Length: 115
Length: 114
Image 1 (cartoon, each protein chain N blue to C red):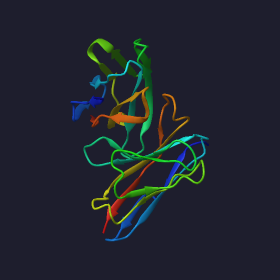
Image 2: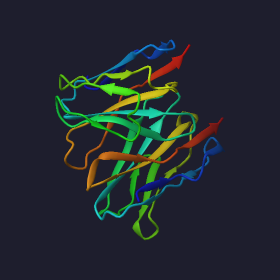
Image 3: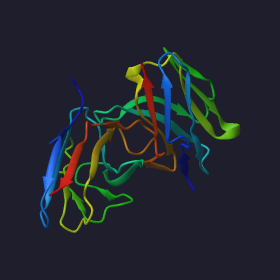
């Protein structure tokens, strides 16, 4: 069965600390996409990254980086030198090729960055 | 600017009343989706539409209805049959339904019951 687990419900850090948000997924499909979305207090979900199952190369975008490991079914998200503006709920999600209509979300991790 | 708009931002419903949430996109996307978000939970799919005049039930369709008369519009009606409608509702769209694509989201509508 397909499932996304974000075991960290809430994380608090002080500004400039590095923080890693964990995401573990389950799927029977060999072709799938993984996503991270950010939900700031305003509520809108902001797309951050999409990764396909055939590309395990890690990605870096400014202070954000993503570590995709098929061996452990994980797609972790690291924020380097966190800032107050990073405070939000972050969702990991999975989409499978055999069921492209469905985006399966984890329960989210609330990140609070204190000045 | 291309994007997804939802209105209203806040909506109040009285007992026994049907209310309609608006979702419009100018991205020329074929597929549109409605999700419900409850506190501390992830998003759950209510309905989705792959093309105009076609839509499918998601995981929690009971008490909701939709229509897709135009490509850019996908309104959601919360009927009186939905006994626990208080939630945050998010609309999304993607370029196509028949292949893996990214879903982009609107700003959401918060529905409260009086």
